[in-house]
Image 1 (cartoon, rainbow, N blue to C red):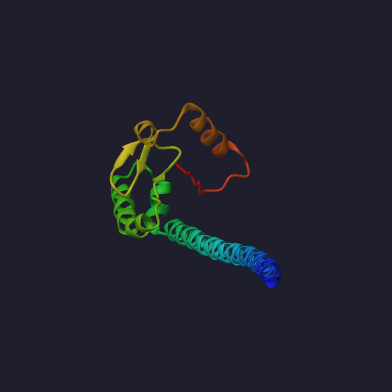
Image 2 (cartoon, rainbow, N blue to C red):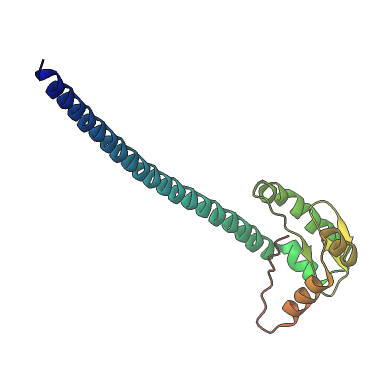
Length: 163
């Protein structure tokens, strides 16, 4: 009978040691799991950003190719030299319609206008510049920036507008 208190103390000691070990093992397991999850999340984010970057690059590449193609198009060149000739306007309109499927698939549209003319040619219609600006929702500040851009000596013939 004198062994009963000793065995009880021994059992409690073993139980406490086992509980402490289980708590420690569970803590290490949760810590390592969180590390693995964070590494996996970082890898997934990196892959996502790489894919998003390549898609953005593809969008710009398609847009620039389409613009380069339009800049070398005979109808566009003729329209630029004579923006009042309705035949050239119609030809440019038809060319934009053919190229609009590619640009719509990438989430942008290409519109053409000659600064000396009051006409904007879109893949859907031809419209005067004031109505076009209103349709696009440009503010007076936006129009001022566009005007400043075209007045600058280092301007390009191409203007990307995110709207």
